[in-house]
Image (cartoon, rainbow, N blue to C red; front, side, top):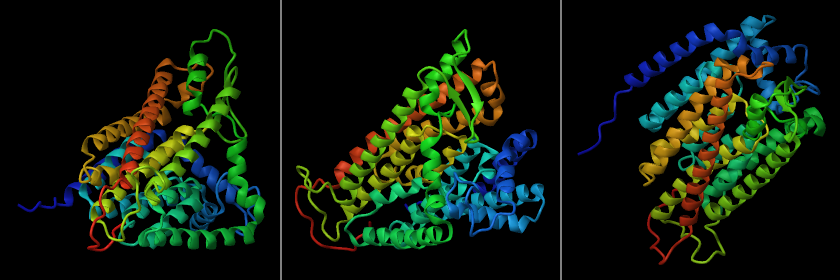
Length: 431
């Protein structure tokens, strides 16, 4: 009996109700959530798009151009800019839901639930833009591979980290070459425009910014220092706003944790390379592995499942390895998580997909409990025990999520290249 596609009105109602509740929360916490948007607005005032030295140096130039466009639409009023910015992100949120509904109602429902648990913050940070571009790339991997690669490049132009995602999406097969080609073409065009207009120093400033910042209090690697700060009878650990516009912790052992973060980042790069080898190149050279034939539906399905797991593992790894963990980073997981929830079940990954989804939903809810609901107690001179406990729980969940995603990504990627007998050449390649 054919499956009946559910009516779309339930998704519309769920989106309206959830977003109305988020709007009510914003009304009570507006000053907290508006802060970064006001910072965006004041930073671009009077700045020329061709001369952005010192203007939002922590962000890639294309995202600054987008902020300048919204500022030009808003005029001189900061309040109008906040409204235009939030409305733009709200429209992007709605567009993602619509896009996902056309792909899978299950994916749409997961997007609505996950972003609801993050809260109204999704409308007041720029991170929804790369999240939406990664989602677009995932939905076009097979049908429009060149556009998929282009979307990854656009995501990298706004937040850098999506550049890692092209590694498991590339390869020697026709569609994989198109993804890589779309990525390289769009990336080269944007990179050339940025370097020509801004120079090398401003083009590389987001990397320099990230390399020189301290240990943010919400980072996974700040967990133990934050606990020590809570229970310590003296003032050995202190929290203050740094020149990087973030609350950072200083005290005994913090320098060591920064080194651990750097080591974790190196491990993430190695994991990305390994996943690319196993998925894009079928583990060529490993015992029992061989290259796929031009058309192999079974291998295509395995490869697609492995790509979803790999992308999710890489994004969680980026968040966990980082010495900063701003709450808006959770938005990055929304697209891959929704796609895995929709397609992982069909690919035979029902139980692992359910497990990581539950963990991610829990991490999103705990993140909102930390920021903005209890952030004042976390950064005050006398830290709150409840919010510190919530922060520790969230970070432990994220570590568990990273381990689970890495494990299943490696297992799925390893299976891609395993073949006992060659399959007949029938049908068109999918991935």
